[in-house]
Length: 514
RNA sequence: GGUCCGUUCGUCUAGGGGUUAGGACACAAGAUUUUCAUUCUUGUAACACGGGUUCGAUUCCCGUACGGACUACCA
Image (cartoon, rainbow, N blue to C red; front, side, top):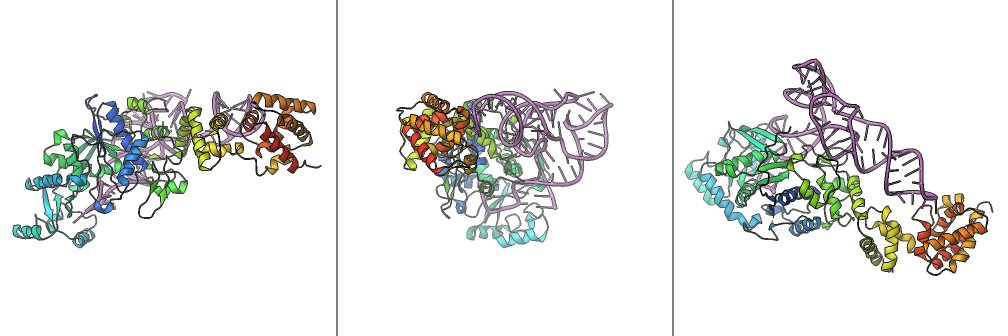
């Protein structure tokens, strides 16, 4: 049995997804958002979107809108937060700086934080002096801060210069963190550094802002990536020093998404290298102008991406693999989330996509095809599109496949597969085709059944078995040896076009040996 | 280097002191299909290693190895 302290089962969860607007949202972020959302919906709770934009240097214009649009596309609805509003507004951390300043001050006054004046060079010197050095109980006395400096000096520096506020971590404590996914994690406070809480620009760091906001916004569960696990003890300390330990949210640190081959965190580089997207939507980097492909633009359906992502790190404990959002909300539980990182296997995503795509009605699939024909400036009636998707629907993985696979319905073959021709373009077959061409050219409103009987009649008139001439027919019509049902293909093409293609092929192709 | 986290088929994973270690994707074969694809059936394939504990360990404990995250006035 896993060590999992289960909270009140039907407690309404207040969870937050708290991305930083530093660029496109990573697909791993979408999974984090999804797990948060699932818990919120399952418990009848609240899904909050908070934007953590406390680093002005890394702010990227358009990133926030991108996040909003990505979540909307994925079907992850926000109940409260940026773009929606709510009782704890503002939800953009840059708009909450006074709050953080006030709480930081409180921490200094209660003796749990202090001012530090060290320059970048001084910090670097300290770190390079001793191996594994960090700003903590063993070094802070040698540094320039309100603990080591005389009061007058501190006052003077406070007034004149820039300073940061650091958390005062007392050694000799053991911090015990109960993680829903990992169980108990113990860390000695002597291992922890005096993290910067307030930066010299007056903005808080993640650690401070995160704890204060989670408290003020009454967050019940902090569900975030594993990269936060090492600093979680600092967060626990902050709750303690603020006197909020009873209100501290439960933590769940999610396993990372790993690259498909080798090891390591999944990166955009890997995705590019292996030819799959890593962002939900197309993203245009405002600096370089480079455009990265998104799942949406690559033809992935939201339902497929959600289903795929949900199972990357979580499983229902049954053999069920296909889940709608509604089913996920029912089945999800944090204590069935895995500890180990999951490699990102795009094949599985494709399989899900194929599944969800084929579950759509022809009308919708025809829409995908018509979108492509419009782009290509090719005319296609809705009726024809409907016919085409009907014969192609079992052969597609992505919506755009209808256009690629459906080429033969819009233009005659530009070339003929030489291998196929040399094998199957025989004297017998061509005799059948000649006869068939004649018959089919006169047919109006050709149906598959009619095409079949016409073809069989042509074959028997030449004393040839229909099956043996079929390959030649396919070559003449499509240029190759594979494709959807021929009779249906001819019905879509129509008698005239079928006859014309036969005429052309019979003209250019010669029978081997003759 | 230090701290923390992890390790079941190629991949996602179920399981858990005694199991033929289960499922899915991928892959392969067969059947169906006039072709290809679909569909169906079948198959290949895994408990990182070493010590304990135990009648018995893949499962519990400890090490080792390997991998990862973190180690900023970034989140």
